[in-house]
Amino acid sequence: MTDSTEYTRPSSPVSIVSVPDPVFGPLPPPPPPPFPDRKNMSTVSSDTTRPSVSIITLNTSLFKHDSLSKDQNHFSSWKRQFVQMLRMNQGADGYLDGRILQPDKEKEPRAYSNWNANNGSILGFMGLVIDEAEQEVIEDAVTAQDAWKLLVKRHAQEGPVKQVQLIQEALGIHYSSSEKYSSTSSKLTTLNKRIWDMGSLSSELFLCIIMINSMSNVPELRATRENVAQQFAQSDGTNPDLTKNPTAKKYDSSDIKRALDMAQGLVDSDSKTADIALSAQASQKSNFCRPKCSVPGCPKPIGHMKDWCVSPGGGMAGKTIAESREAR
Image 1: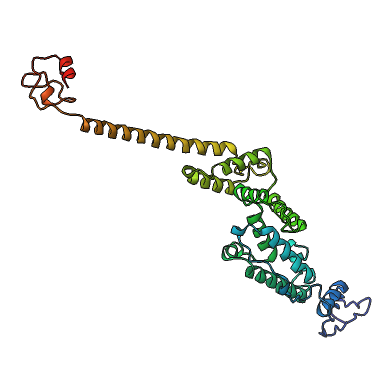
Image 2: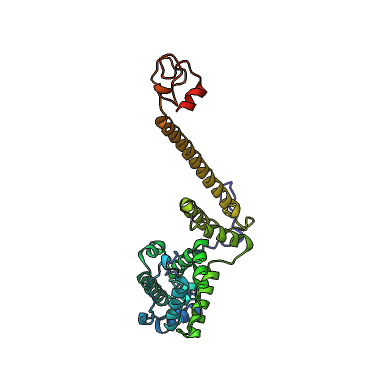
């Protein structure tokens, strides 16, 4: 070679690597779902075949009591028969006190449906065996338990006036040969339970009761007695626990005494007005009946006639009053 540039060989051969095109295949399958909860499967399965709550067909023919009415004072006997009737219907009284709980709608749909049907049957029958005033009390209740609580609350504390009436009724019952002694004992037992169901008697409560009872034969205290009875019924009693319920309303004998003092003030005011009116009438009547002198200028015309007047122009003119009186 004649060129001045020297050519040099590479020390090692050059390797050419061929990279294949990427191949896109299917994605791997997702992981298998978790095994189902055997407990939930068992619950759903048993709910279909053997639900935890079964349908109850109420046998209402067992109930023989009169419709519940606050005016009749018979809640104790009505309550006892209503509970017994439900108890004979597969223990349905558990819907009243909450022992039969409402199942979960998602986990036990059939039991849930059965529970609602049973609850509706009891609630509906309850409405049929109470009067209209009681129906208004439970109108918004959703469950039989809620309605039951409302009725118990309404009748458990009926007030001292009803308690007095029952005490008087009990004291008026006597054993007699015309009636079996056991029947009389049963009446007294029932009345005694009804009396104590209205609330336990304390010294203060008993004082309120006898004060209210003592107003019963006084026409002037009729309005006061009704007002006191209403206030007492709307209160929380003579000795509420203000620690647990600071807003509780207390009503005791001191409130009754204040009401009586107001009534006494009205009586005294009416009596004073009547006395003034009678006095005025008596004065007018007295003046009307006394004779009046017609002599002009008579200084004291009331009490005598012209014939006996000692003033100039009178029948006894120039005489003394004593002489005039003596001559009459």
